[in-house]
Length: 378
Image: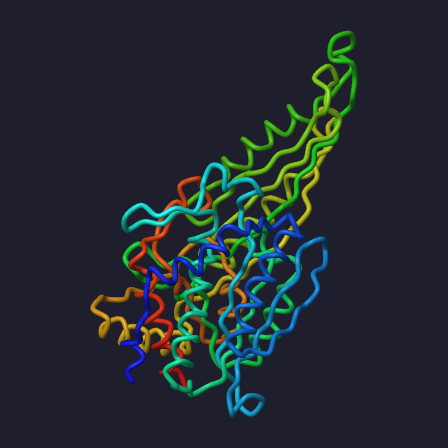
């Protein structure tokens, strides 16, 4: 049977996907992420996979690794499907963004980024098995808990697992036109702190040195460094507890992104050079996690993109491959030189917002694309 003609049913897929979406799993809630991993582990165990639960660390949830039966398992490198189960949406988001279908659109927290793509990948494996089709290579699935914060606790796990495989497929959200990602920009994160001098804001304002005010000036300075080669933005800030106290400490987080590794390295140097004392307030910068450049001209990735492009043509659409910003765990595997295709997941819009949704028809399209890749990569 042609894997591109497998009987995928979007309505049935949505029904099975719904429990995943209604199991909220924000990165910083390890117990919630572990509950989501329980659901995925159970579904894959029912499919016949050998399940391994890998405990979390650094305060994050655990990971799930599933190895599907194959006669060549352990004898030759296979295909790794790599996804994350954490989302940016806090528990309670379902009140404002409930799982619901409106015509050809389906809404829900994390449905696009990236539970929909993860689920579609499993559905492709399930339908291939039900049809008695054996993939040329063994298939392993690895779901991790911390991608949305830069993968601080599982990068080594991802790289070690990817090194055992011939190919990596990442079902992050697909592009608007159905295209896939064949390269990603480099990203660096920074932890910022200003340390000032506290005082009573009403009685002794002049004695204080505001950490908040100093951070505000630094944020303007940091974001003004943005240029065509490297961007800088501050997206998190924490400070203060009493309005009648001049703030003594302010913490913030910054992100920098560049298309070329050298440009990012230069940007990191510029950021680190901002440290020092200004008017009695100390400003410090600590390097956070970094995603390396994944170059779009990697030969192995180009080869599997051509396979994907041929499959898309049979499915009736033209597949574009592009390098883009917005990091993923594909940065790591692509930078290692392992043939990697990213953005194989569902199409939609509004990711990371209260309008996050997917196109229902993309469920079957992407399931067929994934099934075709699993059958033709060998």
